[in-house]
Image (cartoon, rainbow, N blue to C red; front, side, top):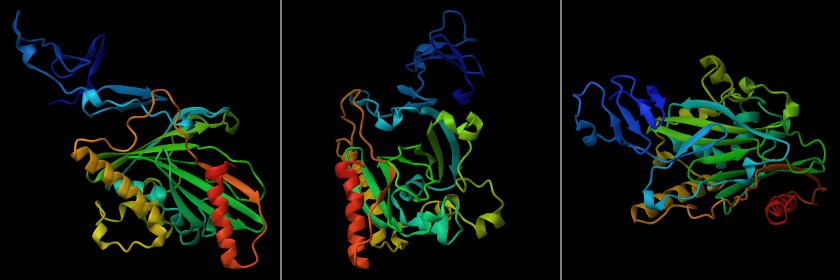
Amino acid sequence: GTSLEYGIPVERGIRCCYHGWVYDVDGRCLETPGEPAGSRFRERVWQGAYPTHELAGLVFAYMGPPDRRPSFPMYDSYEVPGYRLMPAAQFALPCNWLQVKDNSMDPVHTAFLHALSSGYQFTEAFGAVPEIDWKLTDAGMVYLATRRVGDLVWVRVCDFMPPNVHQFTREIEDASEVKPASRPVIIRWAVPNDDTHTTNFELAQVDPAWGLSPEQVAKPGFGQSDDRPYHERQCHPADYDAQSSQRTIAVHALEHLGSADRGVIMLRRIVRDGIRAVARGGEPFGPRRPEGKAIRTFTQDVVFRIPAAPSPEADRRLLRATGRSVLTNGS
């Protein structure tokens, strides 16, 4: 029962550190040192094995039926001109993976948890409560958070890629001037260790001009882990505290979802529909994409100069239309 995470890589597989048994890449036992010469005992021993795919320092395993293995999804955010894709932070939360992922389609929380109620953790521009919208895409879904800052309009778009991936830009936008669209910087997977523990794994697109070391890139962002004293986290909570304090498994029956939670509802529906499809013998969202074709995503910050409409309600409509135009027309 010793874990093969402590095994020794050999030419054809991995050798268990405890008794030296060797397992091939397909799980067959090749050697059983210590057994009598000529023993065929190894032929009765198998280890679970799964095909893998390596990307920028992360290893992905496919655990479904072998005959239904999909191509590895290649998002367009894996290749950004002028940037280097690097392994980034890895950090754990003591709660279920879904309440961690819910956060990714909840743009209202950025105005409160990261600004108005906990203190400005990013920029003051995040303190403006955005006009919000959500759209389904070929990659999954996005949220559109559109804010007015004087005669400027800032549109922030983040992607959710089912079942457990999302991506976002750097939280440094202050919407002080017109700016072209940025591109995704962080791509994050929420991986369940078990029902009540989740590990987030990240890849980062890093501009060499930032001068960041690999150690800096690998450091979790503010408030993503329990690396602060409890008193500090209680006075200035962030994502770790908001997500893990919902119980180890959030009870949806106790929630009061409002119109601002439509993105969370849509995300859960995608996940639920995928579970039901697999239970019926079908496939979840997106496994039959063309091999090697980049999957378009929309994550960005972009700032336009657009004067305010005559009335508050008309301006809200203008903001929502501006946000949608980023998806339909590009920025």
